[in-house]
Image 1 (cartoon, rainbow, N blue to C red):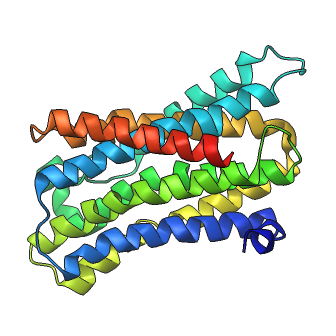
Image 2 (cartoon, rainbow, N blue to C red):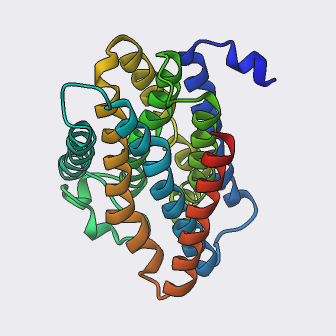
Length: 271
């Protein structure tokens, strides 16, 4: 199985990897078929775990390889990673303000950037999670593209570990969209469809990332750190605050540490 996967093109590898992450989003959304509500402590724990996975993936799978790939170049080793990291955060911050969306579990009148009476809550919720899935898909695509580009610091096992880690943390994202919609009276099927659709952007972003680094290899350190910066912005702006706003701070923090540890083990053991 591994040999078959290794012989695929990086674009196909990235596509399969993000189909898995999309599938994990769908599994999370599928909880609406079994219950109308999810225990808040459990949901906050999953969000904390997701934040830990994203933080660890940002360093071990993205920033560390970006720093190593910058060695021997004309620029200081730290400069491409620093520029890309900051640009990733700035990009997502700008997109966050420009595209109307609604954070999960927020009242309709707290929709960002839009008159809440002009759009349905379901669309705003999907937009929120979709925005956050763009850097995740990009990160997976860039990781597989780096392997094909022949960089010694990139490995197929590490790219697979990144896809697995992001897939794990996509589970609570599917829940975060589908459950609020179900609580508001939407049918199970519609709630599931909206929840899983938020992950559709990841395969698209992954293909773009893989193609970009294959044909524009000097951009790879910038691309890796860009994805890392965007992911850290999501964690700081949405995931951690969302996991602690209901008072479950201790368990959310411990699950964040657990998620960080799991992703670190995956990356180091498989990489």
